Length: 361
Image (cartoon, rainbow, N blue to C red; front, side):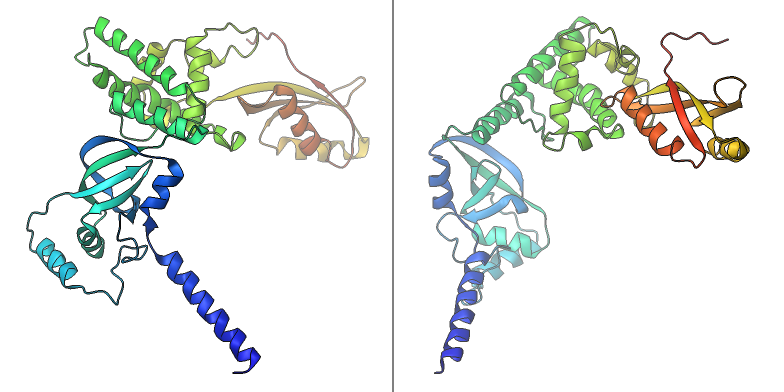
């Protein structure tokens, strides 16, 4: 065999081996060792998404990533299980080991494979969770989240990235439970209060955060992180502000008042986290271009009034801008004046006036 043929054949064999390895489902033993997950707790019977079942205990070499049986293996058992499912025969729940958010088949590989082949999305399973013991940030957050979900019964995932914040949410829910109890509400258990908190407080605030597009400024944070930050500063700490107190009109500084306000709105009516800024710009312009400049200025949406005046300046414009919670007035105004006004040909100089206190008839 020539050297070139040998090299090509070697590459082909290597690629084939790599593909075969990458197509295998995950090895449970390796994951268990990596996470040092040896303590366990019974989780009972739950419905598990098939996409979360990533591996097998002992038979990980027999199935590919889609839990399809390898072609060289006998498929009689698989076909029998699939036929029984099509006929509607009851199937016992499969048995799964859980490590964090992933599941591994202990018993029922063919049932998982047949369920996938039939295009179904989930399967009933008896779950034993193996608890990771390595002292990493990821593991600590996972355990805190798991405890939060067990205590509250809230199934949609709330992802936090800071240690200790789940305890803050539990404290907030307990406060809400006491409030409901004092109001004579039927939602008096902790789980009932948690669900009410999720529906009437947490979700509305998340919708407001989405509308304000705040996540664009916090790419490494989650919606739950921002909820916790806003809730803590607005409802928990109760700090008074000399500036920016208009936020209290959008998000009342009492959690239960916020809940009542949101209850009287649809999601589409939830307030935007934006404030309006009025500013005036005095301008010196080239005389022969004054009328054209006035027309260009008046065509800009944010400019509400344009006046030609006598004296040290030639034109005065009134501008109304919006800003979100993350920008300062100076940033928004400076950007607008620089890019929308000073770029107009014939504008020689500008002076910006920002009102402090205003009275309007």
